[in-house]
Amino acid sequence: MNDFIKLAVFTYPHEYTVLKLLLEKENIRFFFQNETVIGVIPFYSNALGGIFLKVHPEDLQEAKAILEDYNFENHLHIV
Image 1 (cartoon, one colour):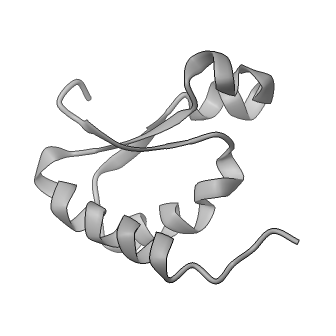
Image 2: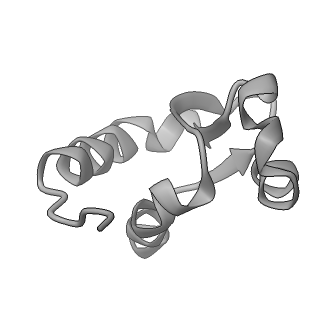
Image 3: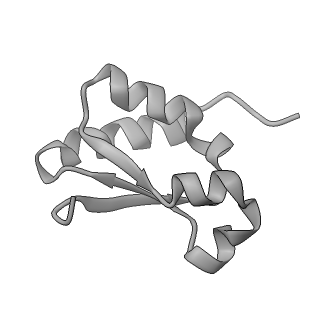
C-alpha cells in the first residue's frame, strides 16, 4: 500500500460513488484512504485533508483516463 500513488482528493464519500464503480469495473487496483473515518465522523474531513484516492502505479494511466472522463462527462448533479 505504500507504493500506491495519490490521484485525487474528495471531501465526502458521495462525491466518488460512481467513480468507484467505474474503477472496479476496469479492475483497477485502488483504495480510498481515510474513507472509514470520514464516513463515521464527517467533520474530520478537513482535519485529515480529505479522502485520498490511491492507485497502484501500474494502473495509474488507466485510472487517470477514467477520472478525466468522469469529470468531463459527468452529467450527475446534486439537486
